[in-house]
Image (tube, rainbow, N blue to C red; front, side):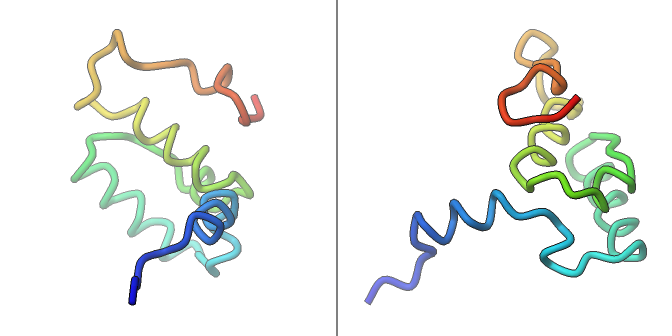
Length: 84
């Protein structure tokens, strides 16, 4: 029996915001600290607490990461599915 996440479930989860998962300000600070330490990306607590879909937040984190070469970074405000 396959115990993985179905593609439909995955699609729904990446389109949910952190509000769906009851992320409060204390958890948001912990997430921000972890992202900064492990991914070298400075994301704001307000971005984490916002109604952004998780895939948009992930895009902001990855494009802001110091691990990603500058030539591969995109302007998040111009990315599909994001609000400026």
